Length: 156
Image (tube, rainbow, N blue to C red):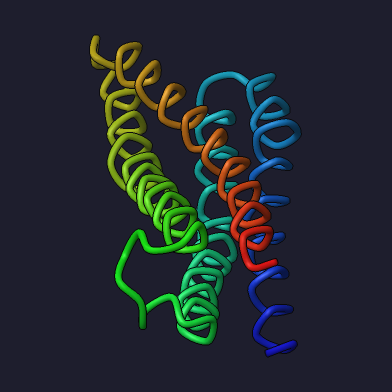
């Protein structure tokens, strides 16, 4: 159980810490650039982060499911305990985070890159959507570990 908990906390820490670093260090530094240098830097940052970030997210989800099973979360009727209800809420946030991350990384980001290269008039609207989804994902990235702490408090 200790190894499983450590894997869960470390993988979540990699996701959260990496996201915080991207939001407050990487992306603002790249915004200082112009034109193709900016596009290349943003693309490179995304390509380097994705394998680390998505792997950490996968480990966090899989270890979280395993921990849930070990605590009997799959053996009871849903909504019977505070643990169940809180875990369901956390799981919904995780699902929203994964969906938002996929939308950001694999739909809106590449679309914006194509539109910028083509000098498409739709680029500003896509950029606004990308930024909005990015900030929503950031909020979820912070909310999920907070909910994790709340889940643990229900086990007392």
